[in-house]
Image (cartoon, rainbow, N blue to C red; front, top):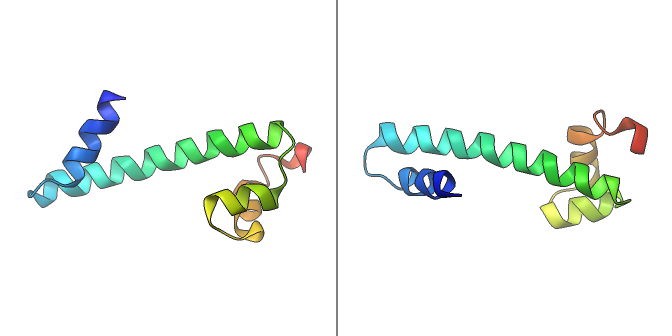
Length: 74
């Protein structure tokens, strides 16, 4: 958790080198967390529509992004 807080602070740094590196790291972390949570939701029987609503995207978008990995649960 401390590393995440450091990244968030770094993203607001006045030095663009530090800020942009932190933004890139946060982007990677966000993608990993989304994958983790989508997998958990699918394992619990959530529909693509339910997941999409929580993420603020369309059902098609979330299914296109995560559906292949979860093919056996579709």
